[in-house]
Image (cartoon, rainbow, N blue to C red):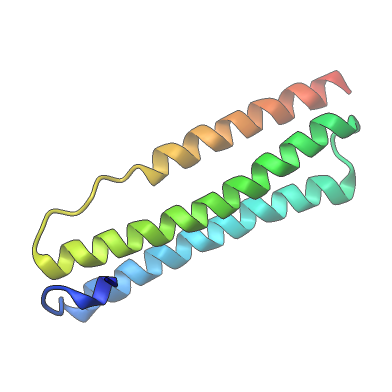
Length: 113
């Protein structure tokens, strides 16, 4: 069952705001993946193994963020249509933790070079 198949149509402003938020998360995911591609293209850090780990982490983080953003969009849309409370916002904590881990890995590998 899709997000639009339940409940009543909410104020279009809320639906459009929910869609803009989803698209903002997709842009964030694309930026994270682009960072991974940039590390790979520029061969930074110099150690191949560490670079590959960072690139894979960033690309997977970007893909995962897109999937979680879509899930959140659907949950928020369904909540608005059925009059239930909005779901908790766990995506921000996931992104914060993952970017922090990637930043520490990058800082450590750059300090070793």
